[in-house]
Structure formats: C-alpha cells, structure tokens
Length: 98
Picture 1 (spheres, helix red, strand yellow):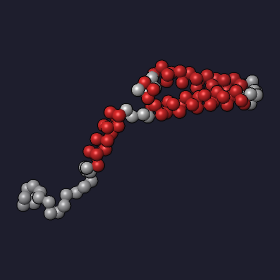
Picture 2: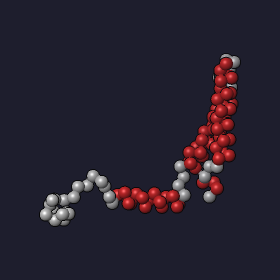
Picture 3: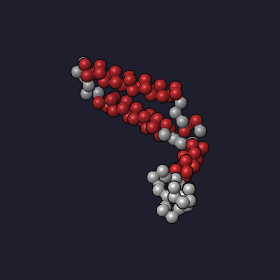
Picture 4: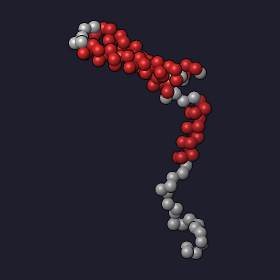
C-alpha cells in the first residue's frame, strides 16, 4: 500500500524540484538563454510531469476503506432529500390538521 500514497517527504522533494525549475527558467531568461538548450528543459519538464502525475494519482487515491465509506454516505444521501414535501394524503400530526 505504500506505493498508493504520497508521503510528506516526497511532497517536499516535488516542491523543491518545481522551485528549482522555476529558478532555472528565471536565470536562463535573465541571461537571454531561455531557449539555448530546449532538449534539457524538455527532459526536466518530462521528469517533473511524471512526478506530478504520480502525485495527482496518489493524492486522489481512495483506500478500499475510504471508498466503502464514500459508498455508504452516497447511499444514505440518495435516500433522503430535504426538498421532498409530504403528500397531502400523508398522516400528519395533529390528525385534525391543526
């Protein structure tokens, strides 16, 4: 199950990678070399894209227990609606309509 979640240390490493890329782009731009080595930027972007995808998949992953809880809540919510008005013929209290 460890591969199904994204631990806090890995999140911090991903943030560091994103910040490093941002700094690199700013420096290359300031030096007028932003497009000097597009292949290197594409490789770096590809690695980051892969890691971002892993993050997205794992942070939105529902464990079987969580999925079961969502199912139970969904079923419970589907059976009741506050907007439903009782029928005119329903037994109401008090019985004489007061």
